[in-house]
Amino acid sequence: MDFFRRKYGKCLIWAVCALAAACGLIWLSRSETGFAQWYAEYLFPVFPNTIGRVLSVLPFSVYEFVLYALISGFLGFLAVLLWNLFRCRTRAKRLASGFFRLLLWGAPAVFLMLTLTCTINYGRTSFGEAAGYEMRDSSADELEQLCEELAAQVNEYASQIPVNGEGGLSLESIDLSGKTKAAMRQLGEKYPSLSGYYPNPKGVAFSWGMSHLRLTGMFSPFTIEANYNRNIPDYEIPYTVCHELAHLKGWIREDEAGFIAYLACRESQEPTLQYSGTLNALSYAMNALYNAGRRESYARIYDSLPPQAKIDYRVSNRYWKQFETKVAEVSNTLNDSYLKANAQSDGVQSYGRMVDLMLAERRSR
Image 1 (cartoon, rainbow, N blue to C red):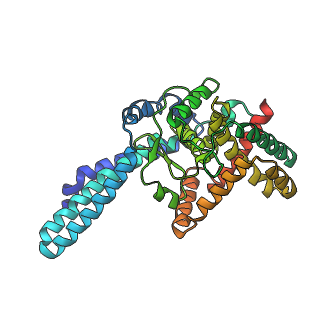
Image 2 (image 1 turned 120 degrees about the vertical axis):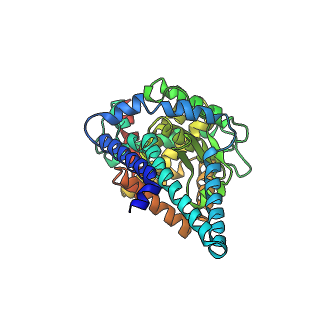
């Protein structure tokens, strides 16, 4: 025991202190002290304004690069360790000891960083409450009216968007980064928590892998980047980028980030963003309408959509169909567990609660 303490003593002290600090911060964020809201307003913005700003100038996802480097390094370490197990047991022991020391330093640091840039913000005041919305149960009639309004808006925007060879939305001529950041900054004029600096969103090079995990986007809490899947259907991309940018402002809950993305797209002056945000929002509302038993209304509203929207929905269904694999199931299960661990008791079903926010915002107009 003394040998272990002498060899790894400093590492153990750091690990205990870092884990204790992280757990204490999480406890504070879940308490009724208002700590999480204070942190979201005054301390969290330091991260996107420092780390996010510095890494924003790089044209690639640093988070993606770091992940590949870590995976390659770990595989390389295993190969060297196995080789030395047969060649030199003493060297193998030194390698294993060094790796364990590195783990004692690194794992608590990762957990603490995740706590500071992500987990604490789960405890902040909800977006609906901060915006002054009346959050309550809504009738099926209200939901149907919302779907009708969204469908009418999709019809309006569809006539203004560029189309691709299949007839759906095309983003080839759009400055995606500039337009999405401008939309978020514009929304920040109405909701101060969304104002200020936004780093550039980054398309992931290995987007095929993200699709296998059924991920359209990913906020990196370690490099403060908004990453998105470049391979998904075009109509999903602007909405996804705004969703990830919302995370960069400390709105970590998925239903809130999705709702913010819808508002940013809808309120922008760019038809492609308006179309993307509204069509994505409509899919959530229509699913809720179908589950509410309004099957005839669902069919009627779907039939009212313009050809572009129906094509985009069909392309999306066809695209995601090919990734219905065991890997996707595991990814979904892990995501569900992560959300529940962070006080989103509905798990992945919290994505559907975005409809409640849309209904509340509709009532507030």
